[in-house]
Image 1 (cartoon, helix red, strand yellow):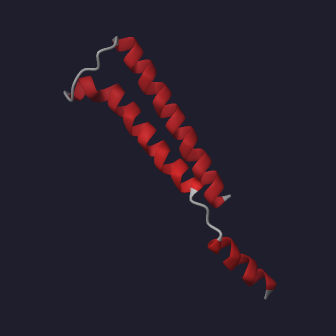
Image 2 (cartoon, one colour):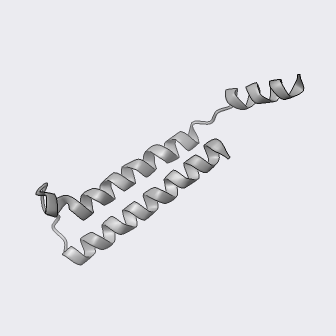
Length: 77
């Protein structure tokens, strides 16, 4: 009986912060992918050097993956 109450309390105490982490992470990943592939796909050219564009895209994707990891960790573990 007590275990059932604990499970329902955990569901009711859902915090919105992990959801924000997930959403921010997805946005960072999308911006990173845009930086990496925008010139190749013809979406436009960023006004910075190619090496810096790849570095920026890689850093944005890595940071986005970190945010998604933190959000999933807080939501499910």
